[in-house]
Image (cartoon, rainbow, N blue to C red; front, side):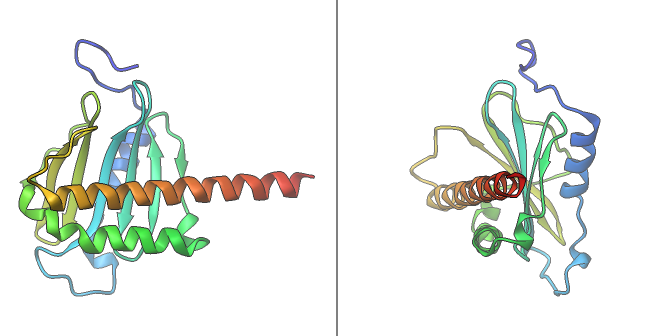
Length: 173
């Protein structure tokens, strides 16, 4: 449970290190010549409850992983599930639309309360904005679209988890 005086989540060292690696992922990993302001990765901190914080990481190649503040993770599903690859790629490919609503940053604080922290990775630096859970401003349609796209990725990740669980149960019989 977040400490009420600071409204912060309890996190493990593994989570902090993995999150930092994702935020600082190099553009030159991809075989693409990105423009300075072209988004190649998206990292979003998403509070799930008062005790559970997740960080979703998506890249232009369709890779999508999720990391939990307790050190847990769900990775590698993009290698098996085409729908997840498509959803993650679509999110990243369209995230340039919200770049104008972001500010360049070198600070990567964890969210407070129910706020979603968004980090857009470009060759020209890392940009950030926040989305308040439950409130999407009417005058920011690109932010609303972005929110829908990343909720779709989360839904695909959950679907992949359920398929993997079913496969494990079937194999265990």
